[in-house]
Image 1: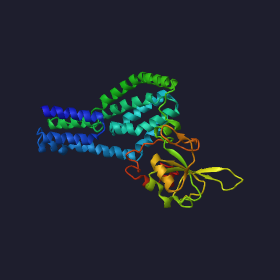
Image 2: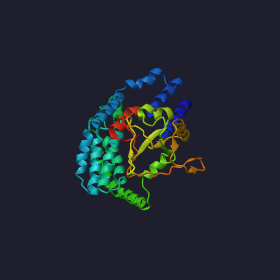
Image 3: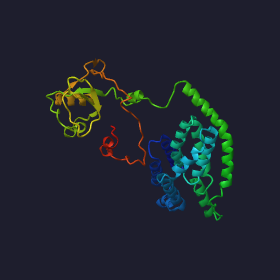
Image 4: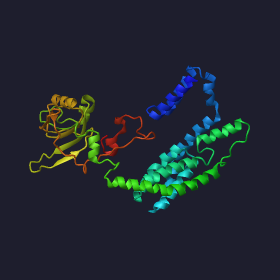
Length: 362
C-alpha cells in the first residue's frame, strides 16, 4: 500500500510538472508497480488486451484524419462566417460548432482545431478572444459527453457495464443529457463571458498586450547585443568569393543576417541590403551584419583580415557597440512555433531551405 501511494504521488507530481511526456510517465508508473511487486507482469499487461484501449487509440486516428484532410476546418470556417459581426451569433455558433465537432473528436483535438479559427474570427469582428475561447473549451467537453466515442470515460463506462453483464451504451445514449447541459451552458456562459470582455478591455486600457513588437523580439532574442557590422577589406581572403565557398556558419559558428552592398559608382552613395545566399559574392566595402558570440566574431575578423565598422566600445563588456539601426519596416521579424504535424518538425535547419523557398533567414 505504501509503495502504491508513493508511486501515485510521484506520478501526479510529474504530470503537473509537465516537463516529461505523459505517456512516458504512465509507462514508467506501470513499470514501477511491477518492480515493487504491486502488480504481476500479467496484470500489468492485461490492460493492453482491453478493447477500450484500442478504441481510444483509434479515436486519435479518426481525429487526425478529420484534421489533416481539412474537412473539420472547412466546415467550421463556413459555419462561423454565418455569424458576421454579431458577437451573440458568433458566441452561439462557436458553442454549437465546437459541441458538434466534439461528438467525434477528443476535447484536446477539438480545441486545437478550432482555436486559430475562433481567434481569427474574434479579431475580424472586434470581439474579445477570451469571451469566445472559454465557452469553446466548455463546449468541447459538453460535446464529448453526447456520444459513445466523444470521450474516453464514456467508453470505459460502456465496457464496465458489458463486463458486469448489463447492456452497454448505445452511440447516442448520453445525447439527451448532453443537449440539456449544452442549453444550460449557453444560457450561463453568455452573461459570464461579458466579465471576460470587461477584463480584456481593462487590460488594453492599461496598455498591456500579448503581441510582441519587433523591438521586444529583438530584445528577447538578444539580436542587438550579438549583432556586429563587419567591413570587407580589399586584401581580405574572402573578397571575391561566394558564401558557399567560405562556409562561415560551420567554420566560425556565426550567421550573416544581411549584407549591405555599396554602389561602386563615385556619383552614387546608395546602399542596398540583400539577404545572404550561397551564390552571393562578397566584394570590397561590403558591410556584413554578423550575429554570433563575440569571441567567434573576433576569430572570423582576425582570420580574414576584416574590420569592425563600429568603433565605439561598450565599457561594461569591452566589445564594439552596434551603431546601426534596425529598420523594422524593411526587415521583417516574426516569432513562430513549429507544430508536431509541420513538415519542418524534426528536420535540420539546412534542410528547411528557408532562404530558397521563402527568402527569409531563420
